[in-house]
Length: 155
Image 1 (cartoon, one colour):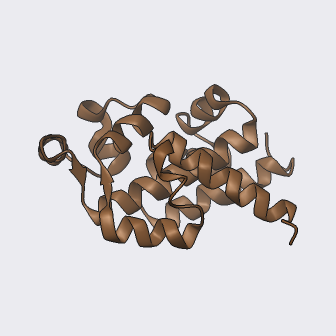
Image 2: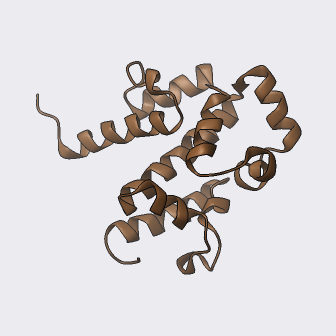
């Protein structure tokens, strides 16, 4: 049975998302989006996942954790002590990493993607993409713009 290009891209994307989260070891166990969903609901993610994601997008958890992830300083401290994110937090962090992957894919370079995510975007009414990713609506808007960038409609 042959694998389609779309399936190869999904596999590559999921591996990249686990890498962004510093969880490369999970890719061998969790190779589909449905399996990732089931894994997150059953196990959550270690706190290191949000630390890895924060390092990639240049976010200081203490200073920007609330604005970027919706997690206040005390919550971040508790999660760091527990070494684990709640199921909801793990799901949010995974979705966030999906958009980071989409941005890297659209721009072809991690640093270009991060710069784009950290500055106001005209297509988003001069809102900063990074600060729109906490909810489904904002995330959808950012994903739409990234799709348009990927297909050459925006630069």
